[in-house]
Image 1 (cartoon, rainbow, N blue to C red):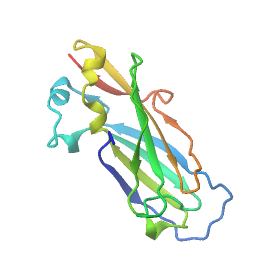
Image 2 (cartoon, helix red, strand yellow):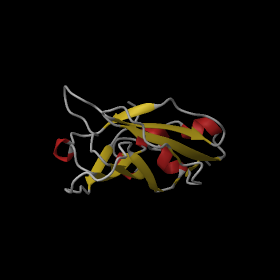
Image 3 (cartoon, rainbow, N blue to C red):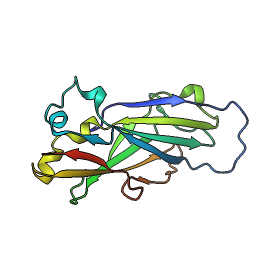
Image 4 (cartoon, one colour):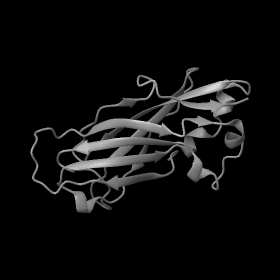
Length: 165
């Protein structure tokens, strides 16, 4: 998998299910930091991983059928990226952690995706003397195979800007 860290902060409702919408829904919050310098990009390593940009999303699901249950169901977060010059990555997926405690409940979950592993070689794609705008596509699938809406940071005018000069 090309992506590193996926973390979740749970804001779970313990109330009864009240909707008919079984399809998960993503909301874009931000990419932070949204600007990286050449010095940072040139020195990417495990020590700088924690300081890499992160994609912040909110995930809502009415029936709570998301997560990773070892030996059972698995739902995934799918992520790909592309640059303003048309270069793109293949679609990759990330496992959720074990969400057994939230299963079957209405979920309102904050997702934080560390973009560290998407940044290596970014300047090589666009040349050493330019600014690169990186955009992300993200969606999730639940245990039933329902696909959420797709977050497209280009449509939201929310690039990650990398200085390669």
